[in-house]
Amino acid sequence: MIVMKFGGTSVESAEAIERVSKIVTSRIKQSPLVVVSAMAKVTDQLVAMGNTAATGDCTEALSSVEALRERHTQTSKALLGEKRAAALAPKLHAHFVDLENFVRGLAAVRELTPRGSDYLLSFGELLSSLIVADAFAVRGLNAAWVDSRECLVTDTTHTRAVPQLADTREKSKKKIGPLLAKKRIPVMGGFIAASPDGIPTTLGRGGSDYSAAVMGAALDAQKIEIWTDVEGMMTTDPRLCPDARTINQISFNEAAELAYFGAKVLHPLTLLPAIHKNIPVYVLNSRNLKSTGTEITAQAPPSRDVFRAITAKKGVSIVNVVASRGVGVHGFLRSVFEAMDRHSASVDLVAISEVSMSFTIETKRLAQALVEDLEQIADVNVDNDQAVICLVGEDIHGKPGIAASVFNTVADSQVNIRMISQGASEINISFVVKEDDVPRVVRHLHDHFFSANSRAAAKSAKKKNGARANGSGVKRGSNGKSLVKRAIAAVV
Ligand code: ASP
Ligand code: MG
Image (tube, rainbow, N blue to C red; front, side, top):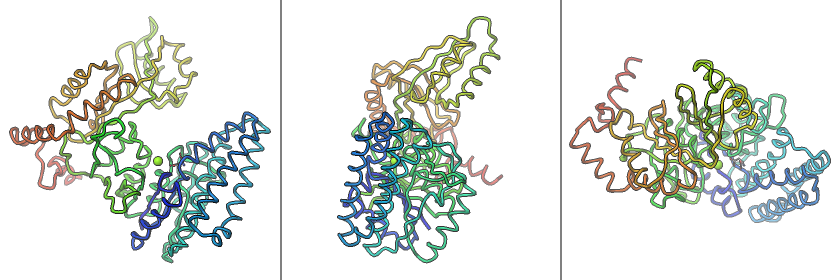
């Protein structure tokens, strides 16, 4: 079996869902399980609705419920025809009644808890998946709607719940296995799940990709397809740089690094279940039925360029922590890390010197309480509006002169670098600049490392230097795998 996930823009309208049904039809022999997001923007609207209701403005929130009802009803009529749409209407209606009641409750208590928020956001995927399943059925696909809350099991970390693979596997095999055996096409909402007690949870914004990967791992899928509105993963964000190209093949490690450092096309945790089960992941364009997009596998052939891609993660803060006089180095670092741990701070880059430490963290995740805690042991200052730029490529490891070439290029763009890190994974070079400088730096770097000229230069350098220029002085075998890696593989 395979998993096919369609994002919000791929199911945003009757026309889009029509295209999805054609794409699924083309894969029918591979036994697809279909995972869908909420229709585009619906989750944002639910979030806004919840906030409005929590201020006590029930009328405004209820009018947003009406707008959602209108959109879903119109889409289902356009896709299903009057008769079949009328048959689906009571199911949709039941959800809208629940939603209305919930909104009234929120307005009464004026508080939206994380648990309440998960319940509220679950409507987006419930509604879209019901419509998509029926749209498939009308088009001759033997579809079966599946309630994700009965398959995907998570812990109770509401708004960012962690999937429990063993339980998910057990429930999914029971629920979905028999459907697949009968050649049916299960259709379920991504992003939503439930705790072992059946309380609705969500996997965090953008989490439908992650759902697809978890389901793929739970059901031992042959591949996981993530259908979106762009032609795969790109060498950089095309909005920053119009010359950005699709990456045809990329390794799990590289893609995970890119997703983590800002490539919006994949939820950062998506690849973990795929890596765990070694399932190839494809990122494809749902506007193009013949899309070949990007293939993500354990090992990818070496890139033609020095790097595989450049990403920029905006909305980052640099936190500088300087030890107060008299605090020993050892004690200082321990205290800083303990404070981070207490506040579950997930930091990106860290630079440490004897009595000071700087780290970057997404601004929205920087808790004031953490800053206050750190202020007990050190002088702290925070710079907002920063961005982490990250160049990723497995072949840079040990290659002399790469870092110099990156930083010379940045210097040419007259941009000040605030922090530097070469990841311990040795597949990325990251640095921090002001958010406003991002477009200029990225364009410059992309021109330098990804233009046709740079490729020609890299090729001729390779010829001149033989194997040395091939990265880390490691000889490559004919299949592109490094001989060292193969030797290791042989020993293992
Ligand atoms: N609908 C959810 C969101 O907008 C999940 C997703 O689309 O992946 O965040
Ligand atoms: Mg997404």
